[in-house]
Structures are given as C-alpha cells and as structure tokens.
Length: 384
Image (cartoon, rainbow, N blue to C red):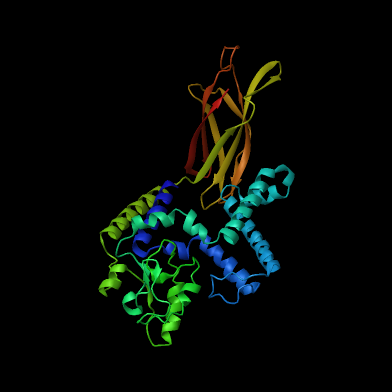
C-alpha cells in the first residue's frame, strides 16, 4: 500500500508537470459529480438550465425543481459514500448492518451525514471547492514551468483584451476575437480565459471547444488551445521531453518496479488475531482447574484457488503445554473468501507456580494450507 500511494502521488506530479491540471478536469470526483448534477440532473433531466453551454447563469425561480434536483443527488451521494465505506466494511456485512439500524447507529450516522456534506459540496459549494478548498490548485504553481501544457488564449491572433485584470475593450479588439464570450459563459469555474493563466482554470477545455465552434464559421482555428506558454510565444511545438519530466518519469519507474517486486511477494493468505474481552477462563474438569484463552482469528484466502486451512499453536520455550479445543478440524475457504473463527486454546498442564498474579506466555501461531506447503503465515499473541 505505501508504494501504491507513492506511485499515485508521483504520477500526479508527473502528469501535472507534463499536462497541467488534467486531473482536475478529467478524473477528479468533484468535477465528475458536478457534471452529473449540473449537466445531467439540472439541464437534461429537470430542464432548469436551457442548455449545457451556459454554466454561469443561475436561473431564478423553479424552486421545486431545484429542491427535487438536490434530493435526487442526495440518493446518488448515498451510493457514492456507501462505495467509500466498502473499503472499510465488506459489502455483505454493510448490507446486513443497515438492515438492523438500531444496532448500527454509528454506521448509519456516518453514511447519512457524509452524504449530506457531499450533497452540500456539489450543490452549494460547487466549483468554489476547487478554488478555495482544494490544495491541489495552490501547489500546482510549484510543478508548472513554461513548457507545461495549459489552456491558453492566443493574444497575438485574438488581440489584447485585458491589461492585467482590467478590461480594455467594451467592443472586440482589432484581432480575430469577435467578443462573443462563448468561452466565458461555458466556463464551469466562471473565469475569462482571455485574462491569461488563472488559479481557477481546471483545464477542462470547454472554452477551447466553444471558441473552435465560433471560429470555424470564419474558417479559422480556435483562439484558445491546449499548449504551453513557450510554444505559443515562439510558435513552436511543445517540449515534452525536458529535465523535469524525465526526472519524474525515472522516479516513477523506480516506484513502479518496487511496487511490482513487493506485489510479487504478497502472502497467499492473511490472518489477523484479536483476543477476546476476558483475559482467560477457569473451569473445573474432573476436579482439575483448566485455564483456557479465547481468540478471534480472521482468515482470508488471497490466492486464486480454494484451500483447506488449519493452524498450530505453541508456547515459547514450552513443549506440549497447550491444546487447541476449537476449531478441532480444518476448514475450506474459496478464492478471496474470508471467515472469522472463534479459537479456544487450553493449558494441558500447570504452566506457572505463581498464584498471586497472572503470568503471560508468548504464543506462536502458524497457519497454513494443508494442500499447499508453500502457503503459511506466522503470527504472535499471548497466553495468560
């Protein structure tokens, strides 16, 4: 898992240096769910917006439709948050839990509250999340250089419209830009790309598509392109191979190689051991006091084939001091299956002469597949 996270972070750095904020526009869940809510639910389904090309104007009225849109998206949020929770709770357990809400109030509280927060984010906070909350927008400048691909307005062809952030022309300048502002109305983050590079731009290229449609009527290419600042200035091709991108690529290869090596060494079975809430149990068997300890073993078959499993237990430095009472026979697990087993281990003889305090013995567990001697894991616990 650490190598996977390292690889993902390095990949985002590499792709940002190479292609700008394409993660934001094409893969970020915030953008994807905003498209679902704004373009599909509001525009296509409920007809709150007249067309998909106007992402800036919020229409007045239609409060019932807007409320209905929020309710619809809340149900989508429930599905999305449930999917996230499945990383921590297996789906089969999750659905069993929600069928008994009285016994799992914490789970339901997390589910409904997280879904509500996510709904408020998508329906109310909207693209302001990308601008003011998301740290990726702030750190992108560290990864950018003059050869990084960005959405850029060509001032040499279209004409200078802004001096800094001050608009110079009420009418179109002496250039190819006709002042239709199609690029402005379609922008989901509500910016004017003709001002130059801005923090709010997420590289969605919607403005480039809008400008391309307008300029095609005059048999001209789009004034807004996905290119680099150096390429637009020098009228040359974008330099993809440069020191920064090559360095990131080499580090990516190293991380990928480490990931492959670690992945090839994965265990074909997993075992987690938890002790029960009580330290031990004392019972009288035929006039003798017998001490037993209870554990919860979570077995998982991570191999692609079914196997029959069992385990052995030994005390450190003591031979034949304990016996496995439960389970008393091997069990089968299908490929990918996991199961919880209550394990009871009892002492077969007097292990300590101290009757004033508990004595703790290190316990060594070896779990293995009976049909494959190469599959085995070792775990440590204690016997009291």
